[in-house]
Image 1 (cartoon, helix red, strand yellow):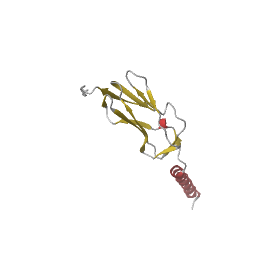
Image 2 (cartoon, helix red, strand yellow):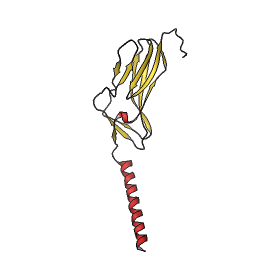
Image 3 (cartoon, one colour):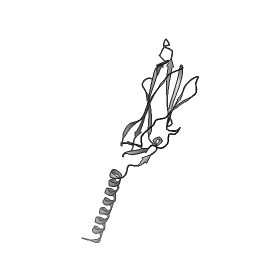
Length: 148
């Protein structure tokens, strides 16, 4: 075997070892820790339009678009990781999600980050906000037209 062929064989083997080692660490290594705001946030409500006094259900999902699972460590409650409800004719309401020690979000998956319910106490537009995402809903009197 010539020196050139031996060199090519050694370099190919070295590159293959690096690639296999990288994927081994990525796939079996410790799950990386991320902040909730690093994932894709989705806010869902059970409707876009409500009647005064009706309960509004809010679900906040975190979507991990990465190729491997990530872990979210639950630190202290913060304004940033809370749900803010901006209501007409009243003060804003902040709802904290109380979580356990950590949450694993599998690769290319979404998990329910938190769920809460509150009562619509005034008519008008409400803005629900969490981790920079916003959703707007309408609260009407019972006899109002719900077409927009």
